[in-house]
Image 1 (cartoon, rainbow, N blue to C red):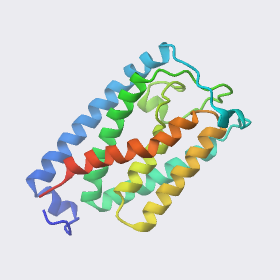
Image 2: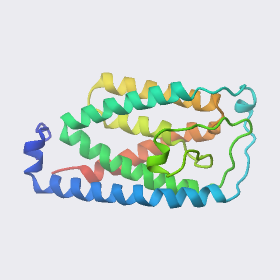
Image 3: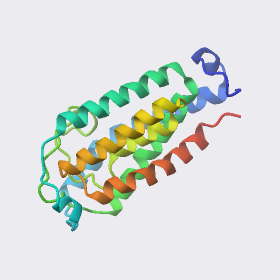
Length: 207
């Protein structure tokens, strides 16, 4: 399918797009069904507490409202763009799949306990994805920050990219203020986001 063809009607008539979209959707649903048991196991295990001099210098404050406002407003923008552009949708879908998979691997490999002074982040969507109101040990790396960076990389408009990356920066700072993540969790997010997008775009590529 030529890159200039973005409409869903044209895309759906292309077998490679249809196969990759359906397969990606099935895989993502499977991941979402597995996530609750995975994070239940993560919450039950013990990890280490890192010495984070940046967090130590920040007095923790509850900024949950601002985190969710920035996060979900930006995600809404992603969904609108994806609904209008089938190519962006396919790239974002597969990039997010790799983000979920790689993040589960890193969380499993790096057992951490929450930072000192953490103020629990009560995410209204946690019940949907985690089947729990509070998850505190899904630390390395920051999923909130990475989600916005992945979405920004997949966007086609420069303005959308600027909005997404700015939102990711704001979210990263707010997460540290609330002591929800270690500094290394936030700093590592862009690196892993680029890896996820590389694999996601490679799988979603249509020739």
